[in-house]
Image (tube, rainbow, N blue to C red; front, side):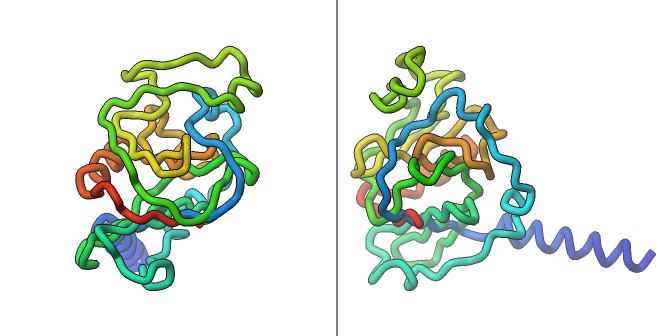
Length: 201
């Protein structure tokens, strides 16, 4: 009986700690293409360890940036988590993410947020159309693969955005972008100014 109580307490404490954590996002260099493929869910890998929130670990912004600037984001494609810090480092948050399906679609390095949009539309890139010629433009709405909010990076066709398909989060499920739950991207969108520095690792 005492073991059960101890386990429950540990579980509640761990969950509360995770909810209270702030976030960061990282980026690194490697040629890739972005924007969610609407059928990416079919290519999910199954990796229960990576999907477990216990794989999340806090990051130090000093390990990635010389200064915080207007805000900083680190997207970790290994732990599948996005980390965010505000300008003075008092607000640090962590969000679970989806990451690119393959290594060749994963672009790593430093970039920044150059534009934000509520209700984004989606246009497949030329590389996506080579893989699947049936893909077509999608207007904003419940079927749009970019979810409810999108933040555009200064790398062409790379975004941090929401998703309508919650199965993608915690998995290799994108064509290059970093995806979040719609609720998470809405929060991140509100607190992330244009010019936020981003690193994807």
